[in-house]
Length: 102
Length: 325
Ligand SMILES: [Zn+2]
Image (cartoon, rainbow over all chains, first blue to last red; front, top):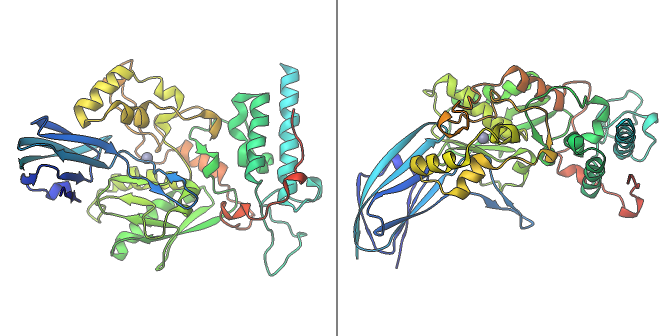
């Protein structure tokens, strides 16, 4: 069974992390990229969290994206960058080396 | 041209009359004050001086459509603002925008504020003082509550954002309406001015100024797609949504764009056609302040229910007045 692993604060994410193929990593972040290991890990997004309210309307806040997903596709190694903070003013990049196990 | 101008003026008057009638419970507009105006002669029930109302949504749409038919350029000043046509200068140079559908209305209003996480009192007060920087000219103020606020602030991860204007009333009470990630008493004062005041502008209904057509037109799409992909991993759709989609000017109450507005992001010269950055705003500037005072005027008006509630007292559609032109 794949897991949805939430990394609420990317700044506190360990620099190395082991996950399983099929897992999904969710970062609260404005952007991201797969620096190495394309195919081992793929990025989905970025997304801006929105909310479904009564009446069926989806309300979207004013702001930059705040969620990035990485899917562990197959065993191997990958390095991902996660960008936090304000993307329009002094953002911060955190890198994480992922080991994807079967 | 003169004929167009006259027709436009006539339509404004018609729309204002209808709005005014709505505000006065069907009375002739000449016989009483416009919406929200206090009047010594106004009938009082249970201490409530006036019962301001807004046009039902269907009439706001009709009003906007009518205005658009006559003069699309002036459409932005209508919508809910028809009800305060006496207070509006169409040609006055104002530089930030308010989405008319998210507007709180022209009467004084206190929005309560609470925090999602345990927050020290000094930090609460500091954030609140910056939110109330808009209150120097605008009639909306922010007050702390120990209960669940209209504005609910979280300082957890998720970056900086706020829902727009009256949308905040629809957000579930267990969710924040504004996010100020990581704000503490150690955060520099400049960030309070740049971020807290910006997000509060959204709460007042103001969208991003850099999404005004004139500023979007300065951006080279190819450069923007490339730079944002390389820098943040943003796909085209994200770049479109964040920096290339211009706001529908017909939905705005606005005039010329202003790159130093607090509502404008900083954008690097590397993505603009002329290589010059869009400087962005670092604090509420004089024009922001004047604009806020214009759309949320301080004056002798009584508080009114939230804009969303103001639609409750509707009348049968058959009683609508035809203002088609
Ligand atoms: Zn914003």
